Amino acid sequence: MKFGDIIRQPLPVATFTFLVVVIVAFVRAWVTQRFAGEIPAVSAPLGYYTAALRLSWPLLSAAASIVMLFVAGFLIGRSSVRAELYATRCFLAMPLFGVVSCGVLLSSDYLTQSLTLLLLALASRNYYNSFHRHYCFDRMFRGSLYVGLIPLLYAPGAGLLLLIPLVVLLFRRTLREAVVALSGAILPLFFAGFIHWAAGGRFDGPVRQVAAAITSDSGYRFFDGNTLFSLIAWGVIFFLLICSAAGVLLDIRTLKTKPRNILFYNLYVLCVVAGIYFVPYSSPVTLTLAAPAAATLIPVVLTKFNSAAASMFYTVLILLSLVLGLI
Image (cartoon, rainbow, N blue to C red):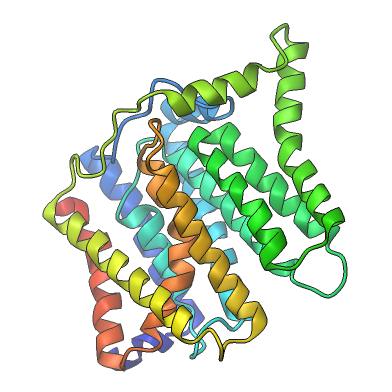
């Protein structure tokens, strides 16, 4: 494979690159003990246990996190190829997901981060597959169920519930499917409240815990602790995302309906994540919530650039994610 053809790299190469980026990110953070932010003092109902598990079993948690990120990356890469989102068939979404999800920024609460990203990838996959002429109650229910679990793991993720009405409108679902989706989103919180009540607490205890976590200040600031190279990496990512958004808007009339709606869905995800960032409890995990959408959108512009420019941007991102914590 020539350097100029790096955008058209085969699946084994993309998978290997993705695994290298993820494993290096965890090994680097483990050796240097440099993470983006500490575990917040107040956690969501399930996030409390994932954070405690990470402290008690760090190696096992890291291994489980790598597996979950691999599954999420595989789902994102497969969905992008099956939906034919790009002008050229490519598997770049996988390694790019590794770069954004943990290569550039890895939270100290990496078990919560990885599980949240897996749930978001599963939800997005089900929403993509709900775009059909017939009813898709099961896919809307499962997708919303995964989204409803996220606030129990990471409280600011409650903002992702805004995706449900957007999905109903964007993928042209019926009112009955919207009711099913809403039921799926509420179900995890209902069961958490029931279990909390059965254990002797208040039924609304989990809701209060999530609300308390959202309104608590985590103390995290985006520019705190960032090196020059990490800022360069984020600058390249933001630049490519802006170019990708412009490319989607310019090609809106030539894109097929399903690819267009999937790309717009990911643009909406970025907007929602940008809003979540301003929640007081926001932590490094917030920025990684944009990883599935960013990994899906960036190849839009890379496949439109000439081979040399696309390969240069891609190589810069991979190299920065590999050496970021060593510089």
